[in-house]
Length: 231
Image 1 (cartoon, rainbow, N blue to C red):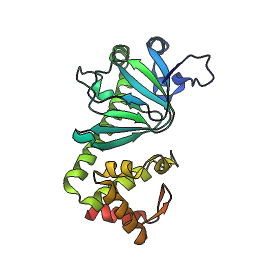
Image 2: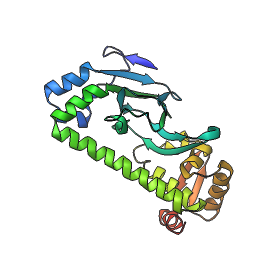
Image 3: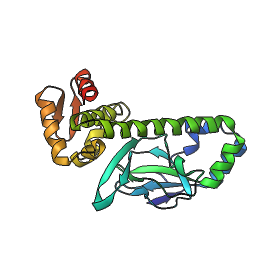
């Protein structure tokens, strides 16, 4: 993890992000004075489950994975976050600990904004608050869908759901599947790694997908959707 200054070659002008364009000059200045831009390396932890974060992250560049940590070193992957997303909004108005961990799948740049300064801006700018509420509601909806799949789907349906979710992100991150191990994929589906590997081979044999080393190409989206619905 490296703290970046505006004079550093790696620095990216974070205030140009679309969501910040709704801020007034004074509000933008307030956030600028209470933020730190950091370069995280692949494998670095951005947020640790069970800690008390004092800041909210805004991802400028890179790919991160949100996941739950359970007993016996078990993990369950919740989502992938790409540039332009806020991380940790659920803790903004809470003193509770972080409900999940976040790790970098690539080198990442993020802006760390103190919860206090972001809270002041939200109180003053209704449009900015509405947009952040929309983002948070979307994230919550995705989490509820994940829980539903875990409760009511069999293994093949869970894996199909994971493939469809990740495939939907490939337009913005074409190399996404290559960033994930088979265990990562299994943890998105909530199944054992061995089961995920076997099901992937079955899906490929049935013509649903094509395995290209670590990359996965969905050949028949409608059939994968059918497996998801039946699962």
